Figure 1 (tube, rainbow, N blue to C red):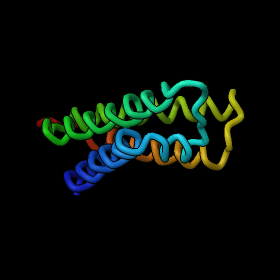
Figure 2: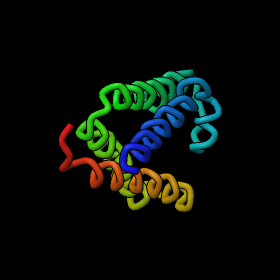
Figure 3: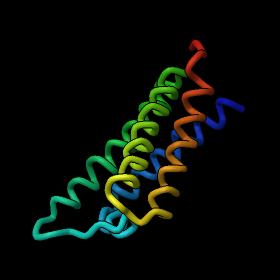
Length: 120
């Protein structure tokens, strides 16, 4: 069961990343972001919200190692931390920010706790 949930988490990572990579305008709208006078926001979506997650998810699947899955959890923990700090400091739409942060936290906890003490 651990293996199946690990693979699902990695595939979700790829899926989340594909939105940012292939549909950056959609992703900007979903995150309540608006482009300014340049298209740099689209570039950022494709890079940090898109390509980074697509490649990370595929790399974890390719490595298929418990430590790789745990490190994916660390990535999600960092995202959740940033999201929750933002709720305190930045006043984003709370329901949306906490929902996204909750998903990131759940993935972080699963991936870290299920994999950190395993050996390949």
